[in-house]
Length: 109
Image (cartoon, rainbow, N blue to C red; front, top):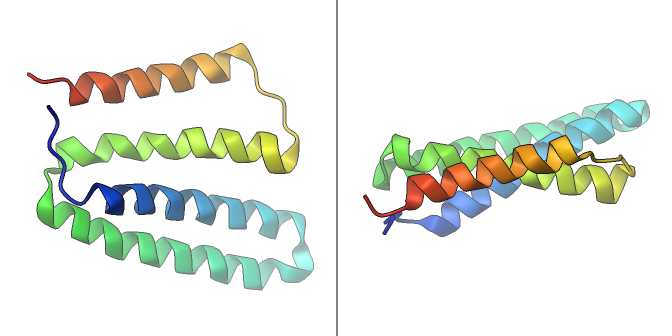
């Protein structure tokens, strides 16, 4: 079984990265608040970088880096929930392939 230490930090890192993308999207939509939103996005990115260092201290990069693809799942959810974007079968299929890849990496060798 895949043994990853500090899994809560990986989850937090994933959410921080997705929040930074969300803030950047809103910054592009609301020009009057763009500096504030870009500052928020930057703070999310800096926080994620710090947490990523903690993750790498306790885990192998080859084991934890694939979890970054989970950000794509969150971005798809945000796109539908907040921006009313349409998703296609290709989007869902691609995300399923990423998640299946994570499963394969996590399988016991």
